[in-house]
Length: 147
Image (tube, rainbow, N blue to C red):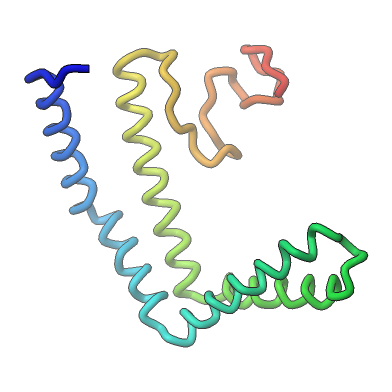
């Protein structure tokens, strides 16, 4: 594929769009929330500990209830996850992450639809996703999908 002036223009415009996104309030809020979480030493340690218990959880899942630490690991992971979920800084970071994801999905969708309605683009979180079949895959919508 040859680099043409048109191709370079598209790349420059994409970089401009990227700069606009990076300077947006949504991205700035994400950065603030991320900094608030990871600059808090005790919270960063709790996240690190949760990552470690997740590894143990994955190991236990391979053997299921037959693993000797099944009950302990299952209880520990629920407690640690709940503690993280209840933390205001973590909750704010999750909201900010979702806002960034929604913004990126919307931009991707606009670009894709400007090319053609048949070009695939991110459709959101999969639960409340906009879908051309009127209800999402598995709903038996107008596209007759069932997967």
